[in-house]
Image (tube, rainbow over all chains, first blue to last red; front, side, top):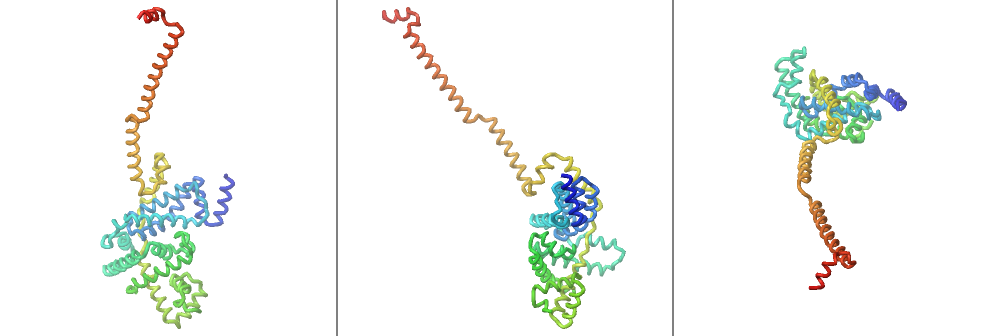
Length: 200
Length: 163
């Protein structure tokens, strides 16, 4: 049993460091889980936030993602890239949330003081009121344009643009072929070019 | 090179170029083509403006107590009840309230069945009564047989003859 785990660990180490960390979590190493959390916390929250457009729900869902990873540690096998598995859970939870209509009921309004606007206030760039307004309008348009995309296209664009994932990885997260991903992205960007052309 | 705008397969080259994910050699070939192709130039500029518009959507700051809340949930699960550790994770979120209701209903039904006499019990009682009647009949038959064997008192026989 121990030999088998060691053999798997060697294979995973050759594969990627995240898988190696996860195998250590499987062995009961809490510090490795902390490292994985530190590394992937922000990308997962940002991805889910851009899917559901609500900060509180995004964090709640991201917690569920890491909780599921922790729960599944004993049966973990490094058959795929760790982030593929992680984002597959995140996307599944985000889509369920969108289908429940939970996020629609409490979507953040751009008129409210949202965390992004707060982030800009804290930043040292000291934008003028006019710049803030322009930024707010632009942000609202981008959010609405992305929100208007079908779920799978939205997820594909977010993974491609913000997580910089390869087509093959996006395909594995979305459980479809690479050519289907290319087609999804092509149609999504075509729509976005139409909706955001005036921002050029 | 074949014009990327003319073919769907090559159009992904333009997407990759705008995402700065194209290798330098292919980028150079594409740039040379774009110099002479107005359609590709227009496509590239439109995609580039989408790309920079999307850049405006900055990441949100994460709550400071995110990890603390997560570890609290993990701790709660590890030291939680058997239900939370074993059964609850397997239940779909939308079935959880329905399952609670179903369990409550099941408890009420079981309680009712335990309290109320069943038809099975009634038929058992009827069977017991039938067995009692048979026993009495058998006892009378035995008595008759004993009489025939003259094992009953003679006085009773004599009295019956004089009558």
